[in-house]
Length: 186
Image (tube, rainbow, N blue to C red; front, side):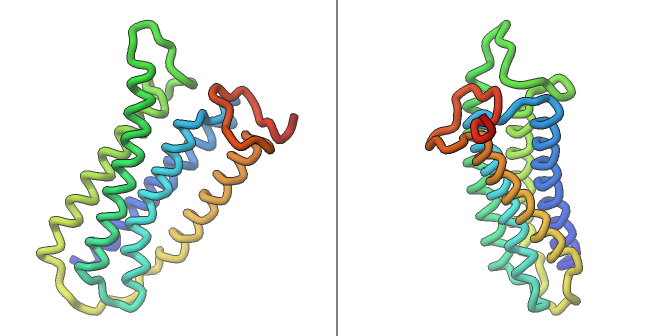
């Protein structure tokens, strides 16, 4: 059961990291810098990834406790609620008929709609992991090999997002409401 938790946490973190990478690809492929609500959603995705990462790092001593799962799931649920509220706000801004939305749709849906789906799925996954702690045995297991790579990948995407936001905002305090380029390079 412990290995299943570690596998689920690793998959959860990597799905969130890959969503952030896909947002970067869309940002540069379509030439559309993220709006302030998009940046909030990216922050929400990064915070969501901290939940499963907390669980993975908590296992470094070889024992996965129900406390580690509860804290990791709690972090994930709170971050998911934050991100879902930002996504829902953007969906509601563009819900009127004939509104073109913000950005280029991917598979028929805008990225903020996909983010809302991802946040809701993450909240559900975190809740399922939390419920499953009733059956979590307290036994030693070998170290989980994917922890370091997962932490490094999350750190890399966090730094890339920070650099992207600095490039987009330039030396201004606020992000542009409807960005068209990178103010740092103008």
